[in-house]
Amino acid sequence: MSAPSPSTVVVTIEVGVDPATAFAIFTEEIGRWWRAGPINWNHNRVAVGVRIEPWVGGRWIEIEDTQTGEGYEAGRITVWEPGVRFAFNYRDVGHEIDGTEVEVRFEPVEGGARVTLEHRGWEQLSADLASRARQAKRYGWANILLWYSEWAFWGSPRRRTAAQSVAGVD
Image (cartoon, rainbow, N blue to C red; front, side, top):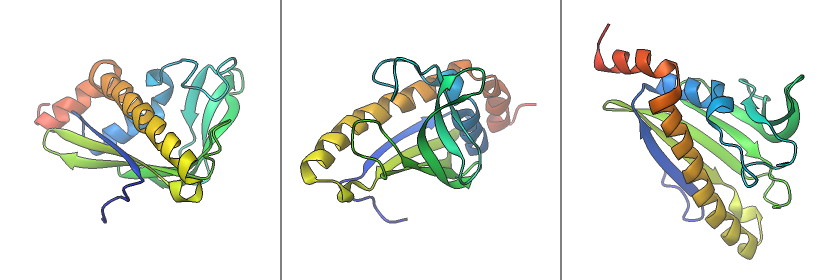
């Protein structure tokens, strides 16, 4: 893989579960580890959760209706390789950065998985907007991966089984 462009936002974290489990925790349990807050939502007055539809063409949805699970489409899945990576076209209300792309990769490392989030496509924006948005997203994505890491370590029901598997314990 080639090195990311200097204008690309790249955030990496390691978790103590294998890549397949890390992928499942990220995508299937996102509604449990994503933290609510006015800057974490596109429609903060009505958002109640997040979910990802697990297929190419699926949606990253900011849930606004708990009955239907529907809401704001914050992304459209463009790559879906369970246990390896997924990517989506990004949408962000009011920030004019629609059409940028986010890819999340899961790679094996000793004792678990490295999770790398890469947000790219800034060259399509004006230089000033791209610079401001990259800075905000760099901190935003870093915080989001910390929430995920905490959930993978403390909260996810998958963590114990996965940790035993990585350690070779039955």
